Structures are given as C-alpha cells and as structure tokens.
Length: 204
Image 1 (tube, rainbow, N blue to C red):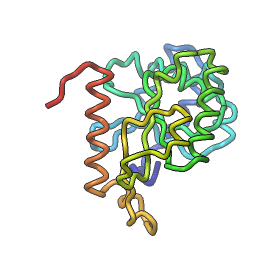
Image 2 (cartoon, rainbow, N blue to C red):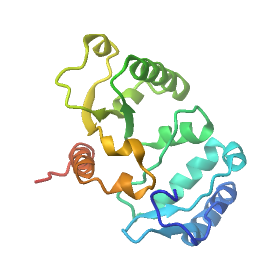
Image 3 (cartoon, helix red, strand yellow):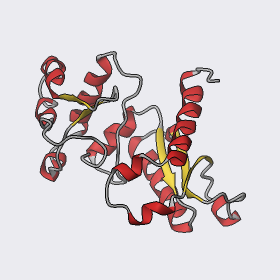
Image 4 (spheres, rainbow, N blue to C red):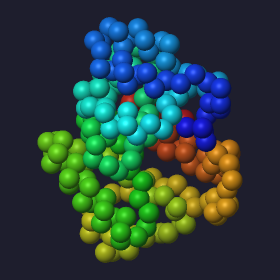
C-alpha cells in the first residue's frame, strides 16, 4: 500500500477485521471511520502488514466486509489485490467477484500453474462457471504476434496485454510504477474494454 498511496501519517484501518466479526450494522457504521481517501476519488483501507490478522480472518468475515462496502451504494468498482494462495480471504473474494483479472507471462510455467489453479478454484468454489469470470492478461508483452502452439493447448484465452517496461528492471520507488505513460495508456484501454463488456456501456 505505501508504494501506491500517500499513506504516511494516515490512520490505520486494520480494525475492519475486528468489526467484520461483529453484526452487520456495527460494521456498516464503523466503515465510515475506517475508509481513507487518496485524493483521486479512490477510497481504500490503510491496512498494515499483519499476517496474524489475515490468518485469523474467515471467509464469512471477508463476505461481511464486501457486503458492507457494496451496500454503501457509492462505488462503481471494488478492487481487491489478491495473491495466488488458497486461504479464506482469497476464496471469499473470488466467490463474490464479478470479474477476476488474471496475469500471465509467456512461458510454460505460468500457463501450467494457472491452468492447474483454475481447475482447483472451480472444484473448491464448486463453481463450474468460474472460468467465465476470469479475464487473462498477458503481462510483459513484447508484441508477439502468435502464442506458441504448446501454450495454446492450455486453453487460456488471452484478450488483453500489458507491455514490458524495461525501465522497471531498476526502480527504486513506487511512483515509477504508476507514471509510465505508455503503460498507463494500456491500463486505460483495458479498463475501457472491461467497462464495455461488463456494464454494457458504449465507450467512444
């Protein structure tokens, strides 16, 4: 979080985990005091890295948090940055998500692991349609015209690409990750495509 938000001196929001275990009305009320704003019309939770709290968070807790955020009725999107683990936080988020953006890189290890994980999530979530909620994004794209045929056999349809940025090999601050014009242009195009597909909005 500190890499992308100016959160120095901003009050901590980790109490959201405590109140997620309370009754819904308490969480709804407390959210107003736990949500932080970054100055760009984006709300966020300023949660410090506390593995023990994440370990103690249940699927129901995450469901309560997301439901309370949704019930505020003020957000176009709720974005959750997940890792590839199979803990309760990840599974609950996947269950409630309308779209999952899944990055791939152009090598057999990435495709093999992603295919296996996709099948595992479908079984654990008991959702045969889960794969239709996933949008695969080819990261570090170098302009390849064709994906090698062995990778096509994994059946992971790629609709979006994000470019390889050589300057990021030696970056020393988070601003460098969010200020690259060409990369941001591609992020904007990705957003516009998803907007058209998932909300039925025509974009010029």
